[in-house]
Image 1: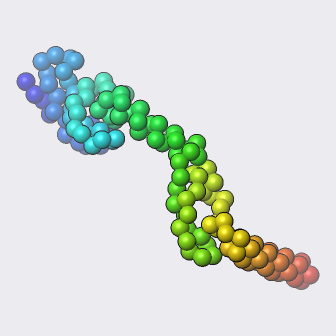
Image 2 (image 1 turned 30 degrees about the horizontal axis):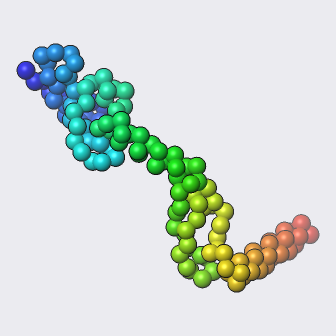
Image 3 (image 1 turned 135 degrees about the vertical axis):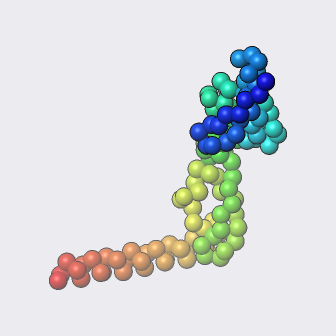
Length: 126
């Protein structure tokens, strides 16, 4: 015998009433996209994967990127060329690494810094 229930997100869950261990709903795996049956207890615990292998591969991939072992694409601010960079250095690097690009960016930053210092000293004088 089936009974219809709704979870917190107002999604419909078909629940079997015959035995406790059979109660559950169909979920979609976040890693492979397959549909799988999950018991109510697993849904309440937050089960999001169809198997341990899917959960482990997804979690390892996320850890890999968070630890900076993966590479991410980024574009040079000077020449516009695409280059790959470690995830841990993504917020630091702004150029592709060519000496011309690096020197151009440094001179731009130097000029901006000098301009800001001049403005600050003018404001102090007033």
